[in-house]
Length: 392
Ligand code: GLU
Image (cartoon, rainbow, N blue to C red; front, side, top):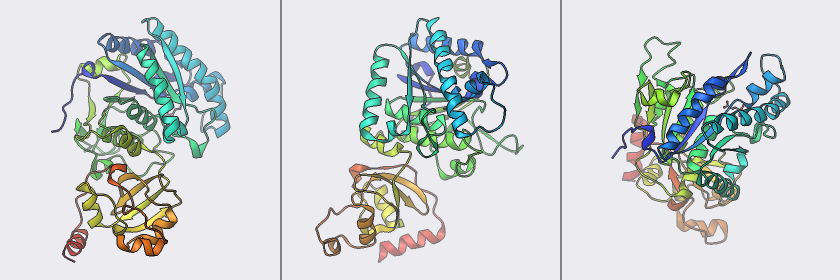
């Protein structure tokens, strides 16, 4: 049964993501009174027994103001320097502001590897859990000073979703200047309709967020929907709301416009949560409609249903599983990419002869796999293909 939206205070653990523009004014720097009001909202939630984590952007924006860097795009090394300067100021501001509510802040700076490598993931999770146990509020950001293009999250929406799944939060709140999801960009399309509740992130919902992530859409709706997929698959609900008013959490409680994404109905194990949220799959495997149907009914992926193997991965790496051109699942590879290519499309009984040893039967075992997208409404052509297979 689908979960229903409930008041913020009825959650156990909430991750709140705050966009740069809310915290930093390009000319005057930190928006202190906004931050103080935000901290008061956090204190009110904590007083009700809710554990709160903050993913705060703003290091680069604040640093560039302090350093008086010119407007326009920054070079990588400039934004790294800006982050180095800005992060100190940002963490200090949070710490001071929370301390007026008698709350202790702890700073955590994460790099991509800290959530994508299992050992480091478990380590980061343990530290954050310990901070929460001690009653403090973790203030989290990407470690922008060392992150380069290849090894960075790049946006705090997905980072916040990753953190939410890592700590088993039951709600992720994305605060920015956008008050929710619309059927089309509202500033471009007067017909755009606001969506109050999103029961499931279907391909149609994804289409509303616009095309693939790009430099321009960074931090826009695209990364928010990506965040929603990571969070909801792991059983964590998500809210997109405007952070513009002071006391934005109070405003949500008072009924301000916001979009709520329902958590997926089927809770998955912590291991599967980690698999599902991996941001950088090492490769991908495209499968046919018959195999997709098998996966959806809870079966493992067999080599026979594999059409194409892309990328270089080793056994045990996380790979994306694609059905009809889009990702439908994530899983741990049962074979190295080279072997996977050799046995793609082959019957399980043929594997030993091809590889020279009797491998496992599954390309991806069902225990190591999690569905990341609901079934799409199939086109007529695909339907026939599926039918043909079943009757073959
Ligand atoms: N980590 C960046 C910062 O603190 C922000 C990334 C984002 O806005 O999504 O400046």
